[in-house]
Image (cartoon, rainbow, N blue to C red; front, side, top):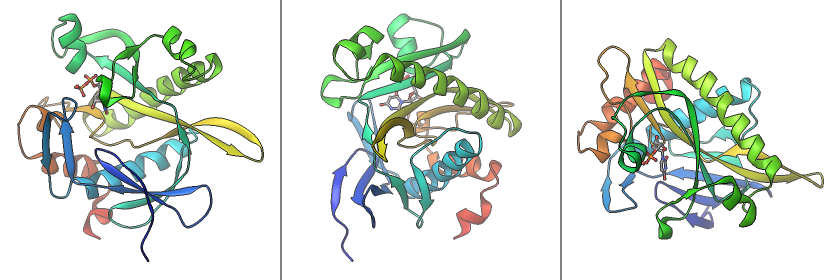
Amino acid sequence: MDKKQIYEGKAKVLFEGPEEGQIIQYFKDDATAFNKQKFDVIEGKGVLNNIISAYMMEFFSKNGIENHFIERLNKREQLVKKVEIVPVEVVLRNYAAGTLVKRYGLEDGIKLSRPLIEFCYKSDEHGDPLLSEEHILIFNFATQDEIDMMKKTTLIINQILGDLFDKIGIILGDFKVEFGRVTENGSTRLILADEMSPDNCRLWDKETLEIMDKDRFRKGLGSLTEFYREVAVRLGLEKELEE
Ligand code: UDP
């Protein structure tokens, strides 16, 4: 059966789901960085991100963080709740890296005194600029209650994800999450959406400080899927990888 495509993003394609209020996320092998200036196709990346993200979303649900994930359908697809995505990327940083270093001239890799939350406008056309809470409110991207919920949830995610990675010898440098509105029985609430994979985190091996995330692509280090696979194996996902 041909599924109806709703949207194609940089790393995923969204299709209509089997039921009202559901969509299918298809994970592509495409890799982009620096606002699409760098592009490549990395065979197997989509499969790894689908498996890792499904695991993470289930882990979040078990820890009381409501999210859009319903079930993984196959190697590249997962069924999720249809949400209205808030056009705000929520970034949490434990260490200085990437654009934080570029913007403020901090030393790469230093630990911040406490977790830093940043908001960015989800707009490739405008280069994902930083947003203050005032921007978010005045542009009607989200209400104050929604901003508070996003901050609180992101801090909890950092805590539980940081602990999970710590147990498997990985440092969680930073990550990005997105939220969406879901309407059920006449009331609307915000839930975690999108994905959680090495494409949207910075992960470093605790012993060797080896990069285990999308910075392998950004920095041209190669072997990206080997490291994503290593993350999956340490999470105990060998069986899923064999499928
Ligand atoms: N990030 C992301 N999508 C984006 C921008 C950032 O998933 O569009 C993630 C990125 O992988 C990193 C964190 O958010 O884990 C902080 O990224 P940063 O702002 O340093 O930007 P980048 O290095 O992606 O240019």
